[in-house]
Image 1: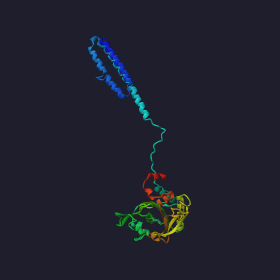
Image 2: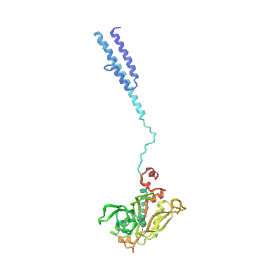
Image 3: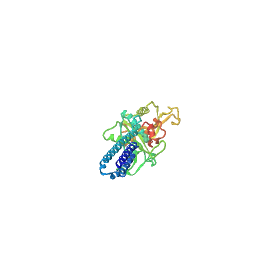
Image 4: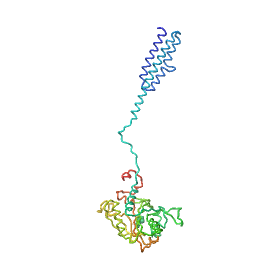
Length: 357
Ligand code: PHE
């Protein structure tokens, strides 16, 4: 066989082999390897072309055409496979990343009101509907508003260090010590003082807020919430107090709850009474929670002491008033059957969810 025929045959063989190999490439990397091995600088085609130099000059243009045809055929075969592999890769990716629209969505947790705050709002709203105005006072108080003006003498146990958080390095303009209020009753003093600045009673106030006592166990937290309610007017009597309590407690517990007033002592009310409701768990028949008494203590109350009215310049001969203060956490616990007060402050979302928050 002459040189040109042999070369022709080699080129045809190379073309067939390359086209087949390209078509069989499994992925772009394999195809690239094949391209290098056939068409690269040191590839099979380069090797065959070394034979061209040995041909007589008149044969070279003929074989040149053949070489160009082979190159074109390989380029076309490479192009076709490359496009095929590329579109296969795209389909695979589409399949892998396909969104299943029938899957359940991912839920974002939404925030909600804390059960204590919710209770506080519910309670405040009931008094608001009865015509009481909402007032607030500072959580950092002086001894005058928290104790003296409320007829709490210096030797009263409520003033002992173990109950009250006193603030080091802080005093009012008279140089007196400051403290975290131990109850919302100082709002009585502040509201009555404000009232006397530009007028006279009547005065009917509901005052929700935080209070602080040095205490921590199943039923006590160093910070808790109270709602203070009081009314000062001519001829206010214990009957008004009882009527307001009866309405409030039935509204809050959303049922008729029996109440009873038990004589008690508070320095700032006279007479004073602790208020019980018929046990909401056993309906009065006696259970563990009410210690078999059928009653649950819920708040402190009484007729505002004449000394308290006098401390803000209200004439106790002309005016009288009732007052009561309730623990918000305690009422929320009773309404929802919560066994441990500390649950409110641990921020366990399972508890908050159970509470419908
Ligand atoms: N301030 C009292 C307490 O915290 C509650 C109270 C308020 C009692 C008003 C009587 C009248 O215990």
